[in-house]
Length: 134
Image 1 (spheres, helix red, strand yellow):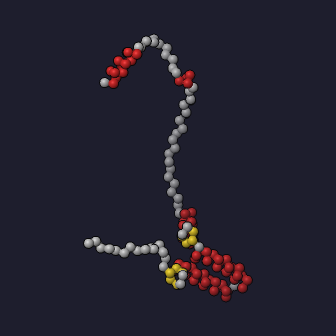
Image 2 (spheres, one colour; image 1 turned 180 degrees about the vertical axis):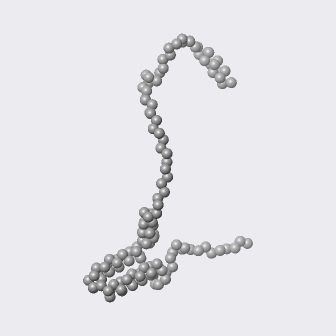
Image 3 (cartoon, helix red, strand yellow; image 1 turned 30 degrees about the horizontal axis):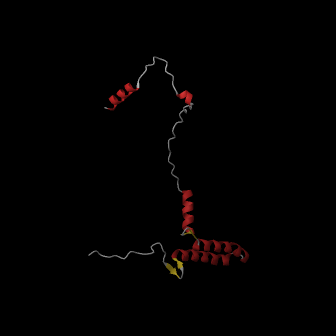
């Protein structure tokens, strides 16, 4: 009797670490929170809000936005690695352009025979065809 194995389900689903946040989201939000905490004590309040608000919005986008089912951080990494990594170009030999044959009109297609013409009957053509078919 064959053994039955349980097939894992939802393998592309990231597990939640703290509440509704995954490990990646928790780390991103934690590092940004630490940076904002340090900025609060180092810079003036107006400069903190000037720098902190765009940083918080960017962090929220990176942590939660998904493009085509992929997190923005993965999408951005793939985007930049495409431009940084070397591209592979495959050379394909082009065919040499041969001079095109001039199109002939129907009158030019018919060739004239300048020699002795031989009258051939239908009977002779049939005999020749039967010999060639053998």
